[in-house]
Image 1: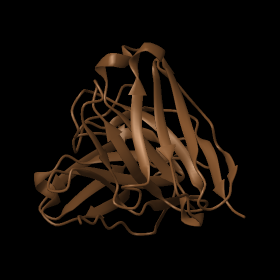
Image 2: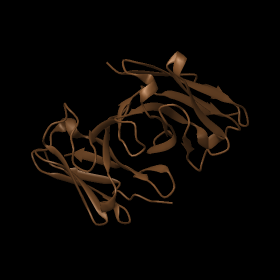
Image 3: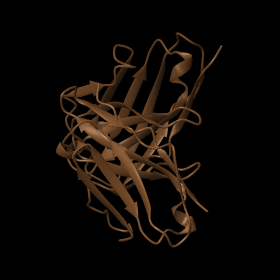
Image 4: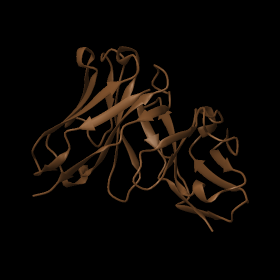
Length: 121
Length: 108
């Protein structure tokens, strides 16, 4: 079955960088659209970024544009989120998720368990 | 940017019907997805493209979408339905996904 396992979270100082990883298995990684979604403590879901099946197209939320970059390594079946210039407001659980089909409008039918990022001095 | 508006909370007695709304400008022209999230767990897709149900989701959950409002309806509510529910759309004008603020469903 589909499995998504995030890693790389932790405590980081403001202004520093962190890279999250999401190891995928149980589906054809090179065929699916993938997303990052985050959730600040006690808050709602916030979409972060989307990447096309081949990595050629990416879109990022305005709140992270220019600081975060979504990417994928098909040879490693792994999705990444490079986070630079981190701010306190980036503190959240970060989920990777797979879209039901390979188009931007498709819903997210599989989610990882999430990894917590805490930005604090 | 596109905004989705949900009521913060909805309360319903067991066995009754809960309706959770999601408001947005001409949302009826977009495909709406709904997610259920229980405490400490990842979200789960419960309705997609306005009214389709993934396998394993009970028929008690249904969705509709027209005009400026999409609605998630949960019939014969059970204690296990207590959760946060989020609506979501793809905003093609900005190439961004948008989530509603979420609605906490409380079963009395």
